[in-house]
View 1: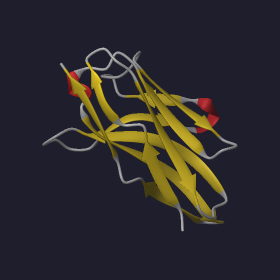
View 2: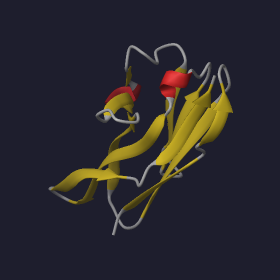
View 3: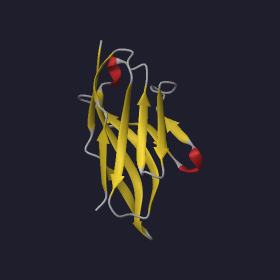
Length: 120
């Protein structure tokens, strides 16, 4: 059973920083990609950042230059460093990963989410 668990959310003031962590546990062969989505209050879930193959990363325009996604392959961990936070960054943040549990047995997994609140 593969499980993703986020941590690091909380309340921070405008301009502050937070670092989210995502831990992947269980029995699996490999983590292909990891990413972060967020769902602001009353809005749809949106992509924030994704760490894809070859060390490349994609970011939403709204977070470019402020957020940095990274991975620790040895520890099966993912991180989202969020700097210069704004009130509009307030959302539930979800970790997601495309994980292979067997040859041909790959799919997306999601964490339970962690709340980030930025006060003005």
